[in-house]
Amino acid sequence: RKLWPEIIFLSLDTPDVDHSELFNYLVEQQSQATIFLLSNMDEDKLANFEKIGQESGLKMGGILRKPINVDSVNAKLQFWDSKVTTGL
Image (cartoon, rainbow, N blue to C red):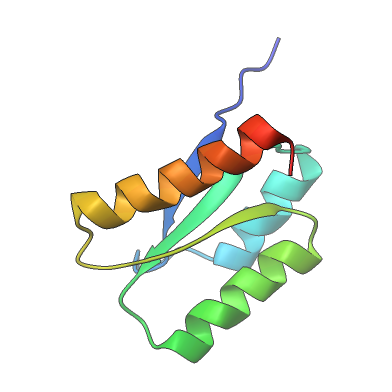
């Protein structure tokens, strides 16, 4: 029996990681996790990663800019929780 997380915080600033390969792996594994992207890269690149994830069928939860602060994480999680609770 496989256990999967409900939420994945994915840093896009990790060197030597092929994020498209990671997205493909999550798709192949039929991941139902909501994925939050973490990065300090420019907005266009972040939006492109989010779009690739969505087009691949992954549940994208949004973007968190680095450096991360507790308030922004809490806001994203509360928004995610409200969508899960209401079934949106």
